[in-house]
Length: 120
Image (tube, rainbow, N blue to C red; front, top):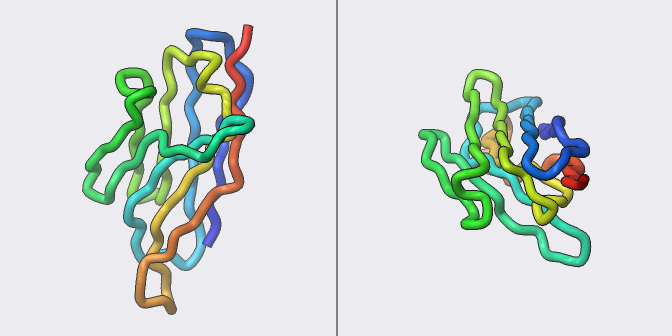
């Protein structure tokens, strides 16, 4: 199983980016999917998560600016980021709980990380 993230880049303050993360492999079911971020010198923190039934959870710092969504048919999670600010600069990681063939429980997986830089 792999999580492949994409969509990071450099954007000016007030701009927008959309991150995508697709899970692939011998997947039977995908549970909670989420995005975390880690800025230099800081701990990794939860940005947003979404359950299989689309229950949502957001960090207070991104509420009303970021929107998480998923496409269950594609095993993909998205993060639409609007009104980006310099403090949003970080490496963004996707995360997912995956029930795969040959394993009788959910296993947690991380994507490789994608850099988001907000700067003028």
